Length: 108
Length: 112
Image (cartoon, rainbow over all chains, first blue to last red; front, side, top):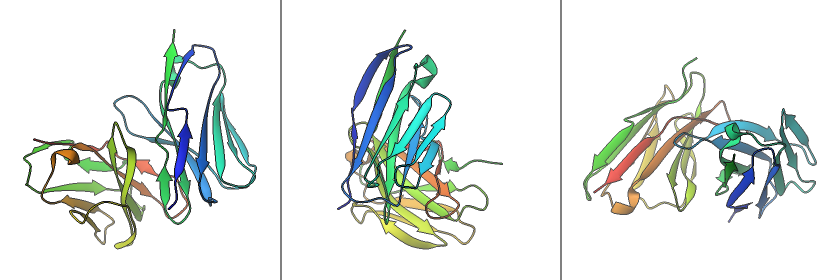
């Protein structure tokens, strides 16, 4: 069945360093979505990518969708303490499957 | 506009009991999905409803069921509760297919 793998599971970075999380699907996706969940909170929708090779930016966040529409990445430039949380990708084919998330810790 | 509302926020049940959780989606959203979140398994898809019809179902036992009403509000039911059912249950609504989801704050279920 459809699987969405996300790496790394955890990432510790110094404040100001960059951070990247990767998402890989076993099947071709119609779209991929990214969510952020703060500690104690619920997932919040960040963005959706639909087109092959698509790149979207939100301030310090850059999202990419692979050419084959099977992988994606989220890159954060110059992390801040407000970036702490777990970042989930969610691949949609006939149903939406979430990756297990990457938990980002920021060291001051 | 109001967000996705889940009730109750917290629930403690005894093993063997059943429980019903409620979700009111954002006004106008016709798709409602349910997820189970645990520290070890992440977000596990339970089911999705669209216009009162179950569109997709995850790999959960038949003890987990749901339904959607004509006003798009949804309920999920878990019968014969087990200790392993302790989790945060999240509801998410969406305008339609292939749109991003808005999550509710969840219902934290503890089975003792």
